[in-house]
Length: 210
Image 1 (spheres, rainbow, N blue to C red):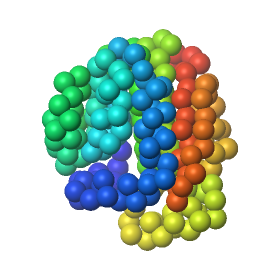
Image 2 (cartoon, rainbow, N blue to C red; image 1 turned 30 degrees about the vertical axis):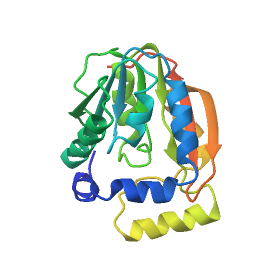
Image 3 (cartoon, rainbow, N blue to C red; image 1 turned 120 degrees about the vertical axis):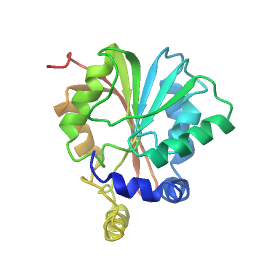
Image 4 (tube, rainbow, N blue to C red; image 1 turned 180 degrees about the vertical axis):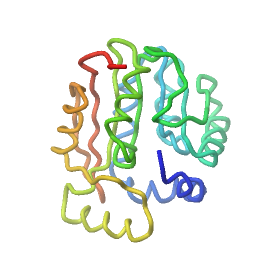
């Protein structure tokens, strides 16, 4: 991923800004994510940020490796996990494009609110698919910046602040992106908010091509 400097600088304010945007859909998103991974044995979270989602999904799954590529984010993530006394979470720094884990290692991958940020979406899907075991699920709640007129406007205002978004999804264009990546959607719910969030769960329909 690029734009790393932005996330290093904004790690301290990340929770406040995310809760401002996600104030309405956040409780429902966390509940859906927790239920989607319930009972999963070995899970990977990419772009975990400061661990808002991590702390929720850790309570319903067995083991999680939570990653982010910004060192400042990982430090905040570690603090949240320690304060929550969650012993089933390992926090590591890792790039979504170059995940340092064996192929087929995880029975669930969580990628919350990151797909609109990656410069190369196809490469990110491919990297996630490589570490996903046969039958694994991908849980990917994703901001839909172009879903409504108000979210369209908010997204353009965010861009003026230097926010490093690389695409603006609607619910339909996000569905199309999953289909193009070979991911069969098994659960989809659009959560209304300042910027709506599409809660998506899917399965990869074919093994990755190396």
